[in-house]
Each structure stands twice: as C-alpha cells, then as structure tokens.
Image (cartoon, rainbow, N blue to C red; front, top):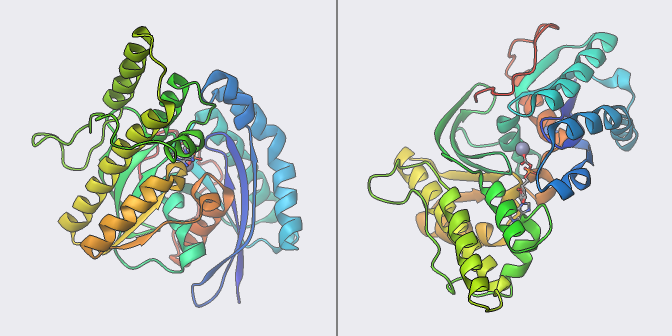
Length: 343
Ligand code: KG4
Ligand code: ZN
C-alpha cells in the first residue's frame, strides 16, 4: 500500500506545495511540485521583505495547493500525511505554512509532521538520484544559509560541521550584483556575466582559509567588501568597471572556498558522497569545480537539478516521506513554527 505525502513550504519568499508517493519498498516518487514566488515583489528592495513575503504566502497558499493536486490528478482526500516546514525561516512566513498545514491535517484527519527546511534541501536529492547512502556530507548554499552538514540519517540525525560566520553565499551574490548594477537575485546574472570574464583577473580574498581559522566555517562578508572597494577604486580612477572580470573573479573565490572546505570535510569525516543543494547549487562554476575536485578525491557528487535546489514543496514532501517511513512522532496540533529551528 503506497502513501501520498503532501509537503508545504513557506519559510522565505516561495510558497511551495509538493506531492510524493511513498511506496512500501521505501521509494519516493515525485507527483507534483508547484511553486509561487514573490521574488519580483522584493526585487526593488534588493532582498526579501518579511511582511511582503507573509502576505504573498497567504494569497498563494490555497491556489498553489489546488494546482499541485490538479497536476498530480489527486484529490485532497488521497493525502495520507502532511509535512510542513517548521523552521528555520522568517517567522511570519513560516506561520502561514504551518497554519495551512494544521488546517489541512485537521480537515483530512491525517498525521502532521513539522520538519526542518535544511534537511528538506538534502532530502530532495532522493527525488532525482534515488535513496541516499547511509552517510552523506551536504553543502547547503542559499540566500539564507551556508552550511556543511554531516547526515547520518536524513530523518533523525544531522550534525552541523560548519557554517558561515556572516553572510550566506547567496547573500554575497545578491550584494555583489547590486555593486555591479546587476538585477536581484544576483546569482543568475553574475553566473552569466562570469562566463565572459577572466576568473584570474582579480585576486579576491578567500575568507576563513587561514591556518588558524575554523576548519569548516565560511566567511563571505570580507569578499563582498573587497569587491565593493575594488569597484569603487576603479570608478574613482575614471576607468570603466570590467563587470565580467569582476563577476568571474568573485565567483571563482566563492566556488574555490566552498568546494575546498567541502572536500576537506568529506576527507576528515571519511564520507564518500557530497550533496550540494540550495539556490547557489545552480551556479555553473560551483558545480564544475566541485565535479573536478570530487573526482580527484574519489568522492561521489550529487547535485539536484536547479528547480529542486531552490525552495519548493517537493523537498518538504520528500523529507516527510522519509520521516513517515522512519515512523517518527507526529506533531501535536499546537506545535508552532520555530524561526531558529536547529538541524
Ligand atoms: O534556495 P534559494 O532559492 O532561497 C533561499 O535563500 O532559501 O536561494 C536563493 C539564492 C539567491 O541568493 C540567488 O542569488 C542564489 O540563490 N542563486 C545563485 C544562482 N541561482 C540562484 N547563486 C549563484 N549562481 C546561480 N546560478
Ligand atoms: Zn532554502
């Protein structure tokens, strides 16, 4: 008897509803993945505005769910369990998803699971590449997070090995894009500009790579400031800013640090598989350098397709399926969102 799991995501600026089928043999199949984004409403502010995001979730939640059921050819009454992002994320935004999930769970009389957004970013890989090996290293890189996680069990045991001490990698992309007069979110336009630029044109700093720095932590605020200073100095000197070279050199610095630390962590922990996920995993240089360095180190690399890497409901449904399969306790109906939920 297979079970249908509904996943609800609303931690940041994407309203996501996903549906998966969990079979008795543990395989998880993607049936629907509908996302409504409020990213355009935040563009003129250069970052996500929490109140705007919450209101957009309220408006989009039910229509997004309806689209997911229509795509999958399922009815609400087909759902066997619901998983919702309980945190981390924006408090008001999370509350919309958690409230919707409670309402659906009550109306349908099905179990409800509050799950961790970061674990969802890892679990989503199973929808594309099948079951995860028993031990995995995850590099999570998004607009809100930059973390190295040791995954002993996706449903119950994830340990943080390191994280950013300041800006997230995606945040650095967004801020550098602003300095270069490129649109928000900054990742895609920088990635594109970098293709026409020289990655060794400017030697930007590699944060937290000194001998006394924590082994698996990251820092991107110094890099962002270095880029801003370099651009400012060039403009003051009356020269034209070589946007493509700056983009390529900045991108090289980010990809270099992320992949070097991920490979170092995998070796240190004796882990043979690296999963890279989150919005920045879509970066072309990050994936090519990771492929190169993982191959050299004998590490299997798994990067879900970009659509699965950015925030969506399918990742929460996929994690929900693993949590259901692991028989983890159901959330009481009075559980609440936790903006700072640890992994
Ligand atoms: O995972 P995500 O959609 O949302 C969260 O932050 O949770 O990630 C969004 C981030 C943004 O900062 C965006 O600039 C970055 O991912 N991003 C990229 C690329 N595509 C999106 N960064 C670098 N290269 C890309 N191709
Ligand atoms: Zn995310």
